[in-house]
Figure 1 (cartoon, rainbow, N blue to C red):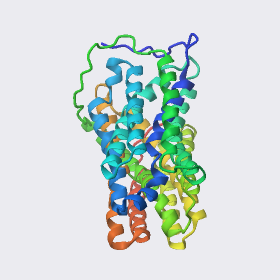
Figure 2: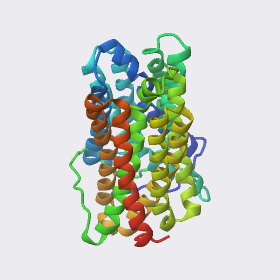
Figure 3: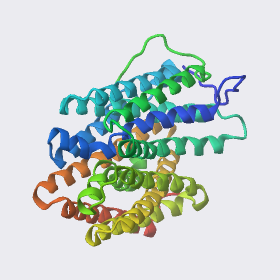
Figure 4: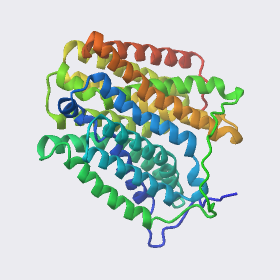
Length: 400
């Protein structure tokens, strides 16, 4: 059996802040194309539906990696998996850097999904395991901030470079490749926290095992995650197009900042969950998410950028609260022998939420237009989050 060293001391090696920096750099690469999709549409001439399909390929890569290699770092060690994730991220950047049409965009997004799937597990665990005694809470917050903060910094960086620097479709990925190089050096210097490692890499599909006694908690938690990730998917895939076409704002840096705001708010929401408590945070987060979705719908009706930003902040805060509370509830309810399978199933539902609804928005755009498609999306996800929130408020299934 492989053993991990839970509190590896640094001894002149980088500690958990360096691991968090690697995590953030890797996750930033997965959202870099967000403000650039409009430029790709102009250059390649494809529809909004195709934008959402290109985006959804990323989620398929994440899900496939979680199912096939979600726990591989337990066998071969954290550093090799982190380096592999950075390799996938670099390969994705090269696909966009030397972009040759839709096939290259699809390949880049798929490789980006592989990177995120590996990082989600290995990087989170690495940050936690490198925390010295007494710093576990800080390390947990660092892992959360690196994950969501990295996802938010990708569009912000790309938007700034595309708006104010030359080569808008090239420079972003050159800069990210440089950051990946820094991250690779940091990873190489990190202490390995897996004490006993397998000599051979053996990938095997992991079943989505949700035991009967957990299904009540799992269903409500997974539906809450689905709704929250649907909001993140909307902002990551099509919000810049909303900003440009519906709100008539064509500044790419501003579009990137709008997307950044939803991930920043999610990070804050996750940090606040500890103070609120999981019992209140799960239904409360759903209801805050409802308010955010209502503001998003109002921004489309009123064609108001400030209202859209308010919706992003409110929705992101609710998503963060509900997501961390849902993870806490599932981890606490699942028996140890079924915990990995239950958490994997939870993430599969969450990543379906980040992909399927936005593809639906893209399809509806062909018939209803972007504004009306966004309104249909907001109402449908709002009703889902409202139903889950009200159900949990009446029949809480989570304990603090």
